[in-house]
Length: 453
Image 1 (cartoon, rainbow, N blue to C red):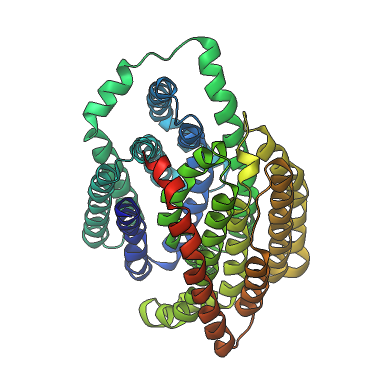
Image 2 (image 1 turned 180 degrees about the vertical axis):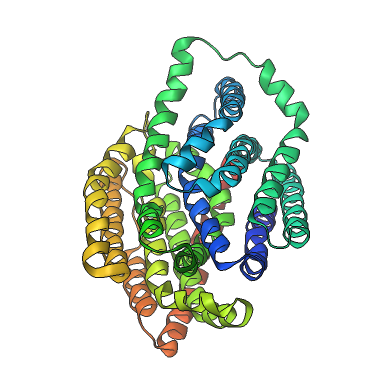
């Protein structure tokens, strides 16, 4: 469990930086600049997928083939160099999106995303090598630089968004240069034959495309809201959308420990351990959502400016959307346990097309509430589709007497104003987690130890 502790601390450092900087940015940036920051955050979600190119996920798939990982490192380094060379096109991108004032911040964001994508692959390789201490050191360095440089930039720049974006790019670039030995080693790897390279890309590119299609369910609605609302009005909604992601971030340490082990457990046909591991993640996610719904409103009221408080009315729906979105990842192992990444791409595409049309229509006819309800319904449908297909591809024996009441009760509690109901559900989830921990970490410890080797 030392590895899980290292990953937990690393995630707390990496994600905690954003949470620490959020009230600072909200208090120092003008309402329009904070709204522009929210717009850039949405754009970063889409551009980050292209910068990463699905290579970190591909490393998990080929984790038992060291030669392939070397080829993947060389490919990622070449792609990062090309990405940085293309930075000047950000001016045209900002002009095309009608945000000419964002050209320079967008260029700095582009550099940040390129360096962060390569760092993300480096961190994934450390996880696959079971080097949790090395992972923690690099995360700590990156997070510390990001926090210090951004805080100083905001303070000295008198609340300048440009200074904030420059600090983020400098932090990522500096951390990447500190990995100089690994960069040299990656450059020295042979990229392999065309057929070997294509075998990597045929898994990575569909996942990258799947991510873009998944963006339809994650940030696409905010692009429409960014056009329909002023920057000052968009700021509160964007803030709540970011806060609604906190439950996903809270369970990320568990995911960092658990997700890479799934493929090896699948080869050993340890289906009950796979099912229990997924269910444990689901219960953690549900508990995190309920806790956040209890504590976020008073924190926002106390720590953030009054012009952002109006966004709290959207928090329950946004938390529900985040919940069902992440459930699709936890309950769909069979979809990703394939020779290529085409299956998740096809499933996402099947729902993305109607979503592209329905969300702007819902916004036009029923406003922000209609858009969020439509997105919640589509996200729920996507989760059920992923779960059903996954079970057909690789059936897992889930403990349904735990799973179904927890899901239904949590959704009821998230949309309810009853604090007593939310506290009762939190107690029930805690007891379920304690009960499930024994078969997962006790009886299944022998199989997990094999993976650790």
